[in-house]
Image (cartoon, rainbow, N blue to C red; front, side, top):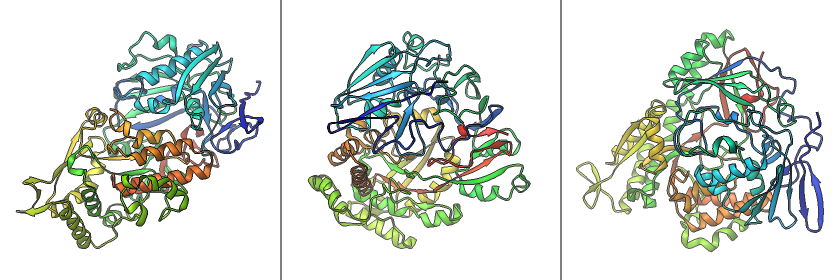
Amino acid sequence: MKRLIFLFILFCMKDVFAAHGLALHGAPKLSPNFDHFDYVNPEAPKRGLLRQATTAGFDTFNPFTINGISPAGIGLTHDTLMKANANEAFTQYGLIAEDIVLSKDKKNVTFTLNPNAQFNDKSPITSEDVLFSFNILKEKGLPIYRVYYQDVASAEIVDKRTIRFHLKNTDNRELPLILGQLPVLSKKWWENRDFTKTSLDIPVSSGPYQIQKFQANRSITYERNPDYWAKDLNVNKGFYNFNEIRFDTYLDSTVTIEALRSNLIDVHVENVAKRWVTEQAWPEVKKGQILSTEIINNLPSGMQGFVFNLRNPLFQDIRVRQALTKVLDFEWINQNLFHGLYHRTTSYFDNSVLKAPPLPDKEELKLLNPYKEHLPESVFTTVFSLPDLPSRQALKEAYDLLQEAGWSVENNILQKEGKPFRFTLLMDSLSAPVWERIALPFVARLKRLGIQADIQTIDLLQYKNRLDQFDFDMIVFVWGESLSPGNEQADYWGSVAADTPGSSNLSGIKNAAIDTLIQKIKNAQTEHQLQTAVHALDRVLLHHYLVIPHWYSPTTRLLFSPTLEHPAAHSLHGIDLMTWWKK
């Protein structure tokens, strides 16, 4: 088969030179004639069934809108214009797109589609499908797509296989790569349907797998498309080795564990430290009937924590947020509940070079100084740290901060102007069994300060709708991060996103300095500029106390069937089950 050649025309001053891939910074790691990614086994056999568990039901096969819940694994049915190499920070190679050209003035980017590209109904993928996908996602898709594509002025069809995007902001170097991540939908199938309506009609799709059968909220099985046109492309060699992939829905994680022990599922990622320690003593593990391993990942840990909703007046005073941060006793939780297996999170980019240094250097200060009036003074003067104090001392410091903010205790109730300090920690019914054992000690310590914190558990769909409308006081949430932060930061922290239902700005932060730093990240021309801007953003977010940070582990803990095999090397991302195979 003729090798896919993916040309990126990169202009540097007056010179023009071609390369075979597109990297955000520097040149692509892989040579033009690469055969496969270096974390796969290109000779992996194609066979068998992979059985997985999920604790979430589903009511739609459209994962691209805020309405409804789509099933686990649905991403396997959709291909994108380009495909990322997981061993590079942000580099992509051709998939549906055969080549890409960035104009010399960087005002437009042109994709030419592979002539063999087709949907699973064997209809060709054309530039009309790409244009339709871009427009429908921007107009009716998840809020993140409007953030991603806001710097695209327009898109035009050049011919049946060629589409050109005109760019507003030539400094947004990530944008051509973002466009390369565009999932391509069938215009013919979608154009006469309501894109925002939940539906279990099986759509025409473009990915390596297609929906074979399902029972709503109970089970879904995907089959590898035998006619998948891209199965032999270099970016796909060694991937998608299972003939079928099935996800069964279980009521909670405890039932999932029993399903693993009963040989009903093949793999389980263990996120509960206490269970992990217990699982190592299972007879099945000792006899090799279930294998266990910890796989290191080299990505930023992201931020998980108790999230304050700043839209609630109760949390608008930073001293209140600082006080409640002191209340969480991480050391007690880690030793008594987690067997000491976790590290405290002290950065939105922990476990990476993107973590902010203790104090800003000269280059960071150039970014921060113009916004001193919009930032806490501590950003410039104080090393961010989380309390490592005896319990009584931490509570005393918390109470002192609350008093500064105008709160006082009367009849064992913390009050201000006659109103008690009371809020609700909202949880979904699936994750509540795990989080309640962590939240209850926190709630008990709050009570010692006179604060009434209630825990409310609701079903998953209601929970999703409440989050989409920012209707909560406090939640547990995690923002994932990568080695190449960019446009998604506007969805996480941008002022516009704070008022956009369904966005990831759950804290509701609105800050001119943060908006500017996000733009600096998007427009960074070098890796060094990117790191400096990310350090500054990390520092500003930390000193705003938007969350009570939790903890992280640099490893992924995995239990799996001995019938599964994986490549000798893992990528920077750690586990990718799509590179595994059945023995």
